[in-house]
Image (cartoon, rainbow, N blue to C red; front, side, top):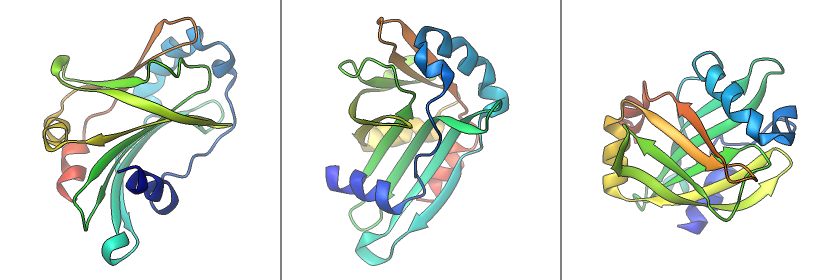
Length: 176
């Protein structure tokens, strides 16, 4: 699965962009600003496939854009390798997060449906990357989701909750 996620980064349109944001230097202030901008700054889910044959990977991606500078703040990508059927989740968040606690996605406020233990694997100048293989049940929950929240901790251990637009995700995942 690690290979698939690394391949996803190379092949799928999940190139990370943007410079560190001022909000990243003060993470405790990032959550309210980002949460308020979700409705206006969220891009719709985009879906595409890259590669051919056994290397073909399809993904759907949503980015939260800082409207002040046009830079990507948050990225959530769900990918499936066509030949194996394996799926994975990739999340990019700003710098200044607690890496040891990872991230989680709450689905419709139901802990049983949530996706937790999304492990941070690395940080780049653009942000920190967390990855997790997804089970069939995770995909089923995501396809039916009405509300998604990405949760991670700042360096002081305070939770940052980002609303991820669920509209269009089910339809995008149905194309996999």
